[in-house]
Length: 182
Length: 62
Picture 1 (tube, each protein chain N blue to C red):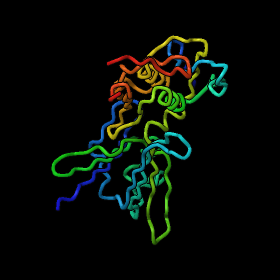
Picture 2 (picture 1 turned 90 degrees about the vertical axis):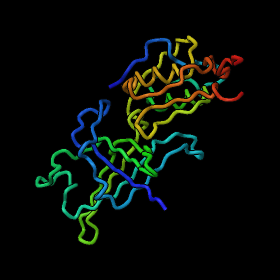
Picture 3 (picture 1 turned 90 degrees about the horizontal axis):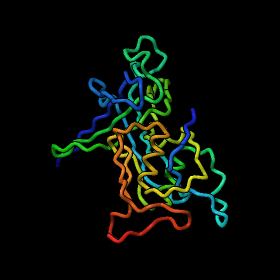
Picture 4 (picture 1 turned 30 degrees about the vertical axis):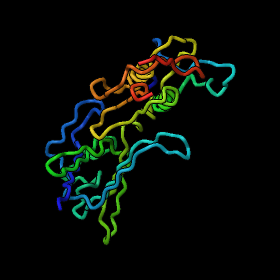
């Protein structure tokens, strides 16, 4: 039976979360002891939480301590670095997760020697961007156009989105859309 | 840093019958997207390549 081959990369040299990311020579797969990906709508609270990636890394060498000056990665380890997880199965590569380091937890005790990265995707970044609405503007536009402009306002770059702009027009609530016969 | 949406882009209008729709002058971008999705009934997510994706339900079978 064919087993999937996982690849976990962190762009340690990233300086702009909205820019292009280069994962060349940033493969940390050999140090991964466990990973867990979670995504989807929270039906209980009716919210759309960010997808999360939990990484547990082998750190007996101290390589992943953000403040250890002898680490080859010092001083690159910080929050909001891009992380990518892929899996290759039967010669096909699947993109499983793409997000950013949100929290770093170190376990320095002798019998553990691990580092824990908690990563979230773009939803978390958008959750930190405050936008203002013009409540008096009642111009009709499609739901996709609304999403486009919110992403613009939130600073999300234009070349990393695939937005369906041809949905129905959103009107005054509760008349939420116009139905156009296909 | 705050951003101002100045163009014709507000899908959430004041509605006297639905006061819960009011009072959101300042809001986070993800909350605004959530309410757009709820209103437009589409699906928004970030895919495994890091792209923001929105699929309108209007392209599906009606």
